Image (cartoon, rainbow, N blue to C red):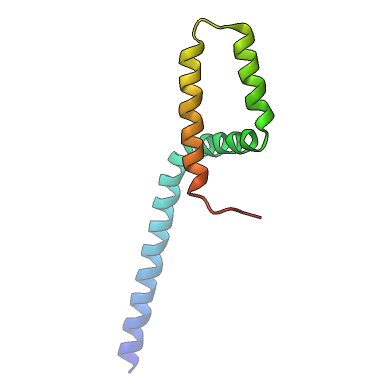
Length: 97
């Protein structure tokens, strides 16, 4: 019985050491993703704000129409693409109260 307990204790220590190494590796890997994920988080918060403030979209549309930029069509395409991506991102997320 003592031998089995000793084996279990040794195995437990080995697993604890392995888990510590895996946590360190994971922390190192996650540090690489920290900046890109912060950028994505910031973009999502901006999209959320704009989505809750439709007047901003109207104001931007009026501004573009007023200034009559040479590249209005290209910017509108980009804006439409961003809008569609934002809608898909937020459509897949459950609503929070």
